[in-house]
Figure (cartoon, rainbow, N blue to C red):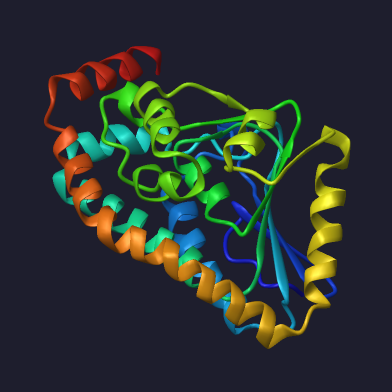
Length: 257
């Protein structure tokens, strides 16, 4: 029986390939508290499990992940201690994903927004359904883009393009994600998981030590960027919660609940 951390994270193992599904489709796989903790912990489990040679990450339903959930955002606004814990958790999630030695393939089946986008591009190879998009709307909500994009996007695309998409929060269609460097492949929607699993099977047959240590060597570039940028970016994101812009965002969310 594959390891099953929480109901919102489902693991299916197909030989040496583990398929990890974010399984909260009614909330578009937004990160509840439990899913945030589960996603931080599961990468170490995969790293230590010799039966797993490669991981495919996808979402249940019509979304990959909508990122942070509104109720959690409101609680972070109202409770400074919870806010600190949330932002520390965001850093731990970035670290856990970049430290996992097993190859990780994202199968982005629907919108990947905010934290969902950061999680997708923290994988080693990214497949996207042709119909979908990525976006990081932190700034549009009044928040500093602290948990991923500010640290990692400049390594994946030009600095000017990274700044444009982070400052505007514009949606980036799948084909544009490939052109920019946020994704490797845009594929027909019905073939998404099939193609991601096929590559995972191929990588699982590669010499393991060479595969894993090559990944870790390349990820040193990513980890150095996170170490340099994340402390400031996350501290600045914490400050965002004291601004009038975030207060207005929170009030708007409360009216819709």
